Image (cartoon, rainbow, N blue to C red; front, top):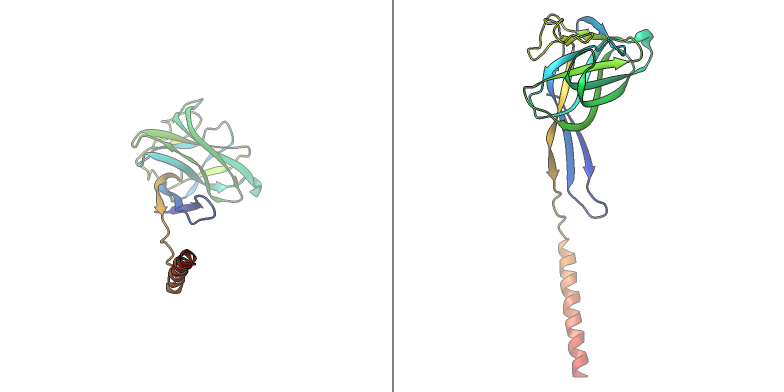
Length: 202
């Protein structure tokens, strides 16, 4: 399982607890064999899937061809319905594709229903090609194209999704004072008491 971690310190100055926000792969269909569909805007190339966790924090697809090897933006969006016009946008993100291989996008974690079917759709200005593995290797859905959710049963994209992992609060251990400093503080306190007594007796 791939896990990504981002850590941010809460507050400034004094030592404060650190909140570690992490995402992990939830659905994964990793093998890539050949191109399946163009990601050009309007082709609605994508994949249906069922998330295991109750959050969705990102997604990725594998590109087997980058148009003329030109770096270009790829947008991945997740919808609750799929057709000629997908509906119920849940999340979307854009990442520059610089070559063949994985393109992953991340967004603020959103709540989803485990086991419910969602639709991942890729789009780009240039006609890149999304890859597919050998045969149908993903049981939770199938490849999508041209607004038809069922025409490509038996095919899947090479894709993955991410879920948020509950935050972990890391509280730093208090730094112990040196033993000599403790003795010095005690000596200064005793000296103050002695000075006050002298003032009273004068």
